[in-house]
Image (tube, rainbow, N blue to C red):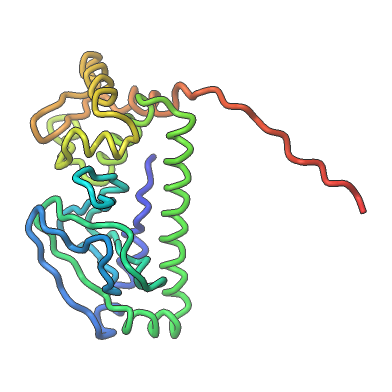
Length: 239
């Protein structure tokens, strides 16, 4: 099972109190809108109510380094609430998006007064760190096919819709963006997708991918790993 690092269930229980705390705005964006950009100095945390958002970096170029795709119940932009400063990433609406914007001025006092709510946010951020560490490890040790399988199953779990015995996954990403998410080149990722399709595991459409056989993908996700050198722990001398 591919876990969502955003913690929708954790945030859901906290939302009524967050909304009643003040310093809350509702945001509505159309597909393609920039919710925030690198260098922005706002101190808002966003929680998605409807739609999908991609978060990444541009670094002053036309190329985008994609970090993640988020959906309803998930939060983003929290780094500028807990560590104010220029934003280091951008957030783009992939579809029409409704979101709640929680201002630092209202959120920090609430979390200080309610330790159990602060713990929810800490758990969400811990899951994000764990997910990021897993993705970095995959980039080093897992081959491209394993990473493609993992991301397909992750997107299916969070955004997929059952369709006549298969799982239809909306693909709002370009080929290059999906390749960035996987951590490989567009050519390598397309080669893997074609291989999966030839085996009957998936069917690639214009803006969707149909997952017909999830078990082979799960097996492939845990499949070939690149050989790595295991280093011994340093011996600590007594005294």
